[in-house]
Image: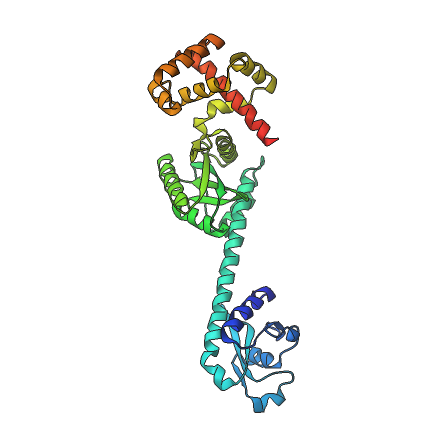
Amino acid sequence: MLTQEIAMEIVKQTTNRLNRNINIMDDKGIIIASGNHERIDQLHQGAMEVLKTGKSLIIPENDRQQWIGVLPGINLPINFQNVIIGVIGITGDPTELLEFGELVKMITEMMLHQAFMAEQLEWKQHLKELVFEDLLNEDINQHSIDQRLELIGMKLEPPYQVGVMEMKLNPLNKNELIQMTETVFGSQQALIGFLNVNRIFILTTALSGNNMDKRLDSAIKQLKAKGFIIRIGLGSIVDKESYIVHSFREAETALLLGEANQALTRYTDVETKALLERIDERTKQQFQERILGSLSEKLIETLQQFFLSNLNIGECAKRLYIHRNSLIYRLKKIKEITGYNPQVLHDAITLQLAIWVSQSKRRSVKKL
């Protein structure tokens, strides 16, 4: 527990505040950190005595001769979980050091406890991410999953649902982000972890669709208030652990095919687009060119806004900042060029599919 890295940080923090040399010895009496770097790796006889007796040791100037290589000062045991794991020594006149020696000891033990807690959080977080990796495997190792879940004190129960959150701006560190998200969803009802630097997974367990929606809405509001720029893709609700991977793939697809300015995209919102992704590229290319090949970019943009306005001419005209008569003229022009009338449902579906195919092609080019 008392590593050299932690000991050096304790020495740095306390030496700067007290303007005294601090030594930290491990459970064998070896100096592992010191304000005087030349003393590192030396055996400290005073520390050996503290480790042997379990009591603090005061070494005044006139008594230092019996302790080889030891300077006057005080040496106090470092306790962690009722075990002495090392010794902290403060160099100087003991009469001046006694008043704040116990304070230094308390601060040292507190820093050790904080380091231990941080290490435990990191260890548990790693286990959560390993559990999620296991759930995505084709052949699930149930024994491994159950063991890891037991170590982190969690159970997975249906229904399950996976969300993938993508962040363009993250003002918090990894642990703060995970803890904030877990607070919204509940640590026992969500398995949360990092997929990569800017994406995290959220696997909910025993949470109904309505509750999931409420917590997602709360998470989005809180994260935006903290300065996050996020998008979330949400997969379908599934009732078996073996189907969690499908919900995850759907969540990734929702992120890929959703609108860039939309905070939350459900797979059901983009399911038709997802079906188009399965068609071979040559077929899609031929379809797009046949339907949209002769349209200008301006007319294609007009179509996109018309469909986003649910075929409402007044709403679309506002979106495009044009007069409704100008919009009607453009829609007639589209019909003349393509042979498809955007105001007729059957034709509108064909035109919408062609636009989605075009967008899919652009996404593929961006990836390259």
